[in-house]
Length: 235
Image (cartoon, rainbow, N blue to C red):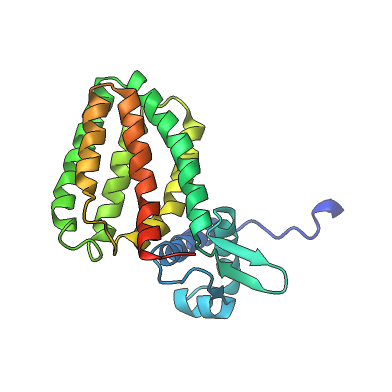
């Protein structure tokens, strides 16, 4: 029997090994972008990426398409792929969106959290405290160790929020903000103590003080913008 002409030009789905290779390339590309090895605004040439990751051009294009969906890569007609630029306006937009979503998620989590949620917050803060003792002495070189533990703490705080979609959107925003956190990790304000900010978040969350906790979180997120302005890191 003849095939449906509507599907005549649809390429076959990659097999399991092909999907695994695309996922692995996506993860490596994503890490290189987020961690700054592929600079914001830089061109992503398919041939260069084929050599860099030792994969086919098709695999590179599939991985880039996934990153376009995450807004870490931009695709433009006649210009190819580029790493999404960074700017102060973009950072403000991300921070404002994160404040709106995460403060509400935190408020709901504080109001709804049970004993298991409390235990998760305490455990996540303990792990964060251990790494922050060392990170404060060398924030640049220890950032890769600190970042996932910091994320775990923030996710623990909002883990009792009943909205799955809110938590999913925040996961996307958190990755976008990581590029800016890395930028500001080299420049800290002497009056700011990030560990004390985290401790205050933990204490107010466990005290079920939703108003204080969300106010602290807003300041915690927005403080990074102050660092960027103070040191003129972005335009």
